[in-house]
Structures are given as structure tokens and as C-alpha cells.
Amino acid sequence: MSHLRSSSLDYDRPVKVGDGIYWVGTTEMDHGWRPNPYCVVDQAEAVLIDAGSRAQFTSLILKIMQMGLPPSAIKALVYQSADPRLWGGLCHLEALIHRKDLKVISHKAFLALGQQHVESSIPCSLEDIGHRLEFSSGRTLEFFQVPFACSSGSFVTFDRKSGVLFSGDLFSSQMVQEKGLFLELGMECRRCEGHSVCPRSEQECPVFAMLQFHRENISSEKALQYALKRIASVPYQVLAPHQGRLISGTEDIAHLNFLLTSLKEVGIDAFPGECSLCRMKSEPNGHAKYPETDGRLSVA
Image 1: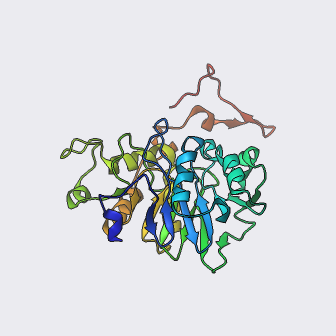
Image 2 (image 1 turned 120 degrees about the horizontal axis):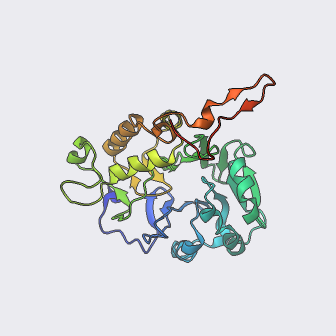
Image 3 (image 1 turned 90 degrees about the vertical axis):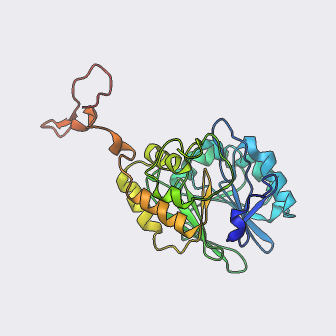
């Protein structure tokens, strides 16, 4: 995996991150948001994962063409998020791919929300396909549900052949100034207690940004711990998150796993006390009695 640490990568072209796995995104920020779309290619078939927003559609298609891949080779689109910015580009992809058997694969909860964007493709829930998607060669993408990390339908995708885990919101971050596609931590970083700004480089700390992303986007400590345990037995070698930088170093992966496992004040757990609506009392008729308030949601 040494090629993943090259500083001479051309981000205007698809970047190979594993056996048949390509990053087909852009380094340009879209209103403070930069998703990572990926393309899994196996012989004459391909699958797009989290295929990007409408604003990045041109860049996505250009990179697919640079790979020498005809759009009609794309057999499925996998959406690991309910983010409407991702689903907004679906109708354009359908028109370009132009396959009657094109599948849109996602959790059933996400499909319900994104149904308005589906025009000609076939919606398939994870249950419909047995949490697996096979290529003609036998290569298989496996789907693992990680509920409430950050949505109820959240899941990750694993390609066993390449060892790449498309981790969705897990291991994601949202840095204002991204430099490079791959996260590379030095020994000093693994000993650092974590600062919003790196004391050595005076740049925004990528580790702090990752931890802060999880605090703000994962629903709770319990959801984060469950998700990390769910993927602990998956033999991944590369983490390819929905946002932020990809991670490939064994020591870096172990360090970030440790930090996330130890992370506190995640999501609702960051609140200092119960909200008033959580302290409802039951009436004799079995109905809940809401506390009297001035109309605002108070926190104890």
C-alpha cells in the first residue's frame, strides 16, 4: 500500500486506492462539503459508491471516462447515506448509464427518502439482496449495518478482494483545508493529546477534526461503540470514508480506532442533562403528560 502515500498523485484523474478500486471525487469543496465517491471495477462491470453531488457530476463522469470505462458498464449505485445532496445526482446518472437493469442499493429507510430521485433504475434494499452484491466473476461487496452511525439505516461496504472498507460516516471528517487525499500520521501525532490546531505546523489538526466530526454527527456513544465492534472482525486494510481523508497505514488505523473507541460526549451524550421532554410523566389513562414549558425545549 506504499503507493497510497505518494505526494505526487494527480487528483484531476481517478486515484487507485486498491485492487479495482478508484477514488473519482474532486478536491474542490462544495459549500464546505467534499464527498468521496468511489468506483469498484471488476472486468467489464462497475459499481459506484456514494456517487457525489450534482455539483460534482461533471468531474465524476470525466474521471470514469479517463478510466476507459463506458457508463453502461455500471451495474449498480450504492448509497450509504440519506444525504439529499448525494441522491440529487441520481437522475443524471440514470440517464447517462442508460441501463434498464441498473440497481440502486441502499437501506430501505434511505430508499424511502430517496425514492423521489429514482426514475428508471431498480431500488434494492440490503435485505432484498441478502446484504451482498456479486459481480459476474464472483467478486462480492458485503454490506454491514451500523445503525445510528449516524442514521438509523447507516451501513458500510466491504470489498474483500481489495481489503477496502467504504466506511460511510465512520472515520469521516470535515476539514476546511484538506491537503492530500490520504491521512498520514507521524509518531508525534500518535502521542499528541489532540489540539484543534497542530502546535507544530499551525494547521488544522486532521485527528481533532475527525473526532469532532464524530461528536457532532454520530448519534451517541453507544451507536459509535456498536459500529466499531461491528467492523472489528472485518479484515480491512484501507478505510475509505464518505468525507475527509482515506486511511491505509496499519498503525494509523489502530491509533484512530483507539481514539474513537475512547471518545466521550458523542451526539446526545454531550448534553449536560435530560431535556424536559424526556422527563414526561404518565397520566392514569396511559397517555404521556408533557411538562409545562414556555414553548422552548429546555435542558436541565
